[in-house]
Image 1 (cartoon, rainbow, N blue to C red):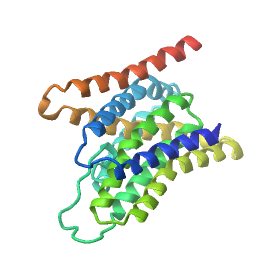
Image 2 (cartoon, rainbow, N blue to C red):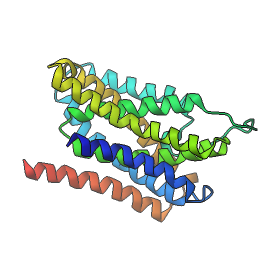
Image 3 (cartoon, one colour):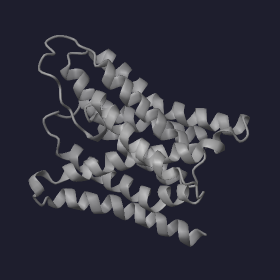
Image 4 (tube, helix red, strand yellow):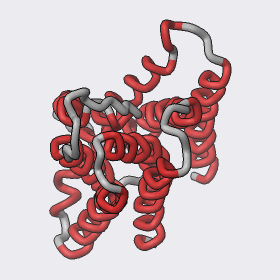
Length: 243
């Protein structure tokens, strides 16, 4: 089962990143729809699945770590420049090949941290789907920035593969810890999950706020938002019916 989840975590960002070679970078409508969907889905699973789960521990520090995760994502975005929610801004002073090291490092750390709670969360499938969908537009934006920064195609593909490997590595590492070091991961699970929830809340709310440009109604984006939230709600009630 771990192999299947790892393949899903790897393939979604890798294929999403490779799609930059086949679609026009100037046409971002489909990317924005995926972003709107993923933002609504992430926000909904935080409210319906992840936050209730982590607050069940009655640990009074959980809220503090949610805020830590929110603030940590703000710091990461000083280096990633919002690639996590589809921004594809390239600085004008990049006249030649200029590899964005800070962007890669922040994105890889972000992807690694997001997958750590997967091994212990009771909402594994919901979280897995959320991470997989969320990383598709992020990888597309990363690929676009690398190409616009005059990075060669082979290097771009290699960097996309490294980014795609981060979530499986985080998931497999946490799984190994939970199997081989009894109690080590579970002791800190609530804090790790709270940090990830804070990261998700920052990303999802940013996406949703940006989905409505100049506060104008967009039919397709609204449908994408309701679909994302609707799927999360359906999974919530399906889980409740199963129990």
